[in-house]
Image (cartoon, rainbow, N blue to C red; front, side, top):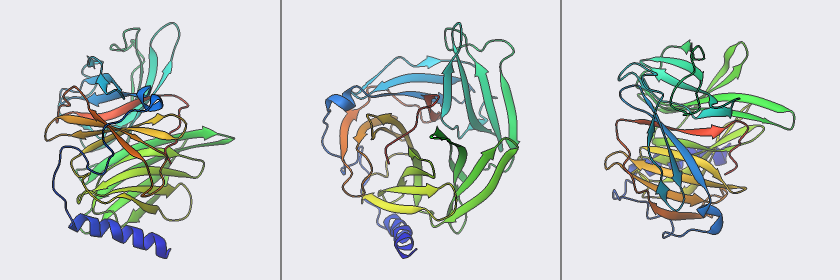
Length: 310
């Protein structure tokens, strides 16, 4: 308990020690690519202001594939944001089933559909949008759905970073067949700027979190009882990124994309297995494409894939 309180306090202190804004974190090693990280990639998605979905392959070289738009007009113009990662699964004879969450206005919806072979059109009659609930106002800064199934354990948990007036909270729900239950909040996260899921286990989810002051932490949140364990990874220079996207890289690493919406630039990092200040972070370089600031970004992933960066 004492260790956890000290860690939470360190986040608050980090917010007061704002560093100089830079285009890429100085805490990362110079651009370097190992054979393992060079083979890694992520499938980046976004929701545009027009309610369209996009997808683009980002590789660790770094490189960026063509930005593909579609399905179009999935959501009303200017209404959808805070998307979670979207699970994909191949279907016969072509296309894939996609499922995820997104906020439309102030309401959370679950969305699922099956695409045709192009991946940009929805097969007729397959689109389902289910209302989860309201209250998702501008105080919510980040949301993610973590699915885990292995060794006889199957669970789904939703997390949100909530910027309250006097504090910052991480909220956690357990998703059951009868709805979202066991709502729990953890305080002490007011200084957190953004988060991204990097590790999934039987009884926990682990996030990388940046602070307004530029520090980088891991936050391990138990899915049952207990409080989050917060560990410092870097002390400064990570405040440039409003969005982080993470994908599994190798057996225990992470390919991390940081998007600076002020400049439209994105930078890639190969992050070793989380080990506090000893965590290896290698800068892979600037991605040769522009990331529109008005998009809301997420990750497409294959069903059954678990993040193992922590």
